[in-house]
Image (tube, rainbow, N blue to C red):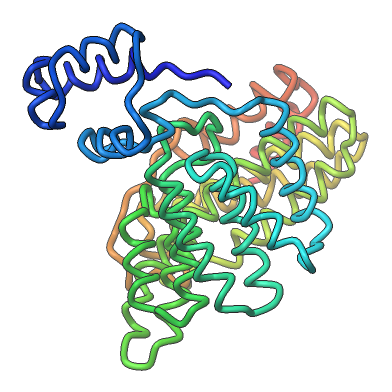
Length: 361
């Protein structure tokens, strides 16, 4: 065990703008006592340590600079993660509460115990587990400065608390928690889904669900492009074609009869890429058909370009937003850019096919 009480109390005193004499007066001790604490010549009793922690607004562990034995902490965290992985909740809670009692202010143990209670609540539909999860997650927020995991933040913890509240039937508290921890609309799917189940409030869900659908589609599009690059690296062209056709069908399913949208330009991009893959596997006829579809889609979009979400199915009543891209100033330019750049560089054979398709018109 290691403590740094003397350094911490000196730093906290200065941070608060107090002299040793002022702190001594506030604590009801002599200035000499404060001097000895800061010089590590003596240590106050536990009662005074608790008063000092309360005065500075920090935990006792933080004040004394307590650090548990790494092997002990690793053992506990491994045990908690093992329970989660195996869903072995039966008879584990005495151990979990024992660990929390021993280390009540360690972020990792508090947070992962909170996650464990939340998962158990979902599995067992147990309100007591959800309530305990909320308590632990709220405490984890107080300890967030200890966190070193970039995938955990106040936002992600807020999501866990919000979901627990919703599971407890505390709809208002859950929605407020999610709305207050919703950067870039990352919780709009949950907020929209929940609002859509409440009689009299269902239409409030529309902007949340529409925004979630648009963001989900954008992320999915990027994921697909990433996979295509991976498939090319493996020379797995069949998977490339299957994924491209799947994404094209998905985007076409969001087309509105009212007119074009920026999704048509994305479809043009994917069709051109699909044509290049067919050419790569020695199927020029399928490649040409993809390029013909790309050309028809591009011409229709360029005749009446629309870079808003107004003509995307299910999102028509949502507030207009503009989309931006760097794939070409027009949809026709997009096709040429895709074929010239390709996945592995310029693709002369498919460019020749493109010329033939254009001459067919």
